[in-house]
Amino acid sequence: MYLNIMVKLYEFKLYLLELRDDQRGVTAVEYAIIAVAMSAIILAVFKNGALKGALEDAVNAVQANMGTANE
Picture (cartoon, rainbow, N blue to C red):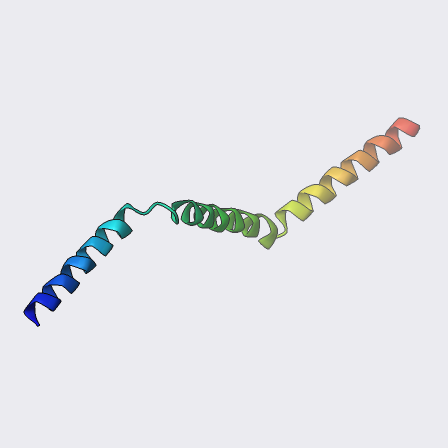
């Protein structure tokens, strides 16, 4: 029985060593971090309507310039 426990502990140790050296999930974690950062940036831009206001100001400026150019 003691030998079985020792074998199981040794197998568990080998499993932990393999798990530590496994690099398969690293890219997925990096993409998840990038996705969170991008969504935070997008939320910050669209939350208070700053982008909408800037676009409306730009369109109004173009319309005003076109109106004065036609005169």
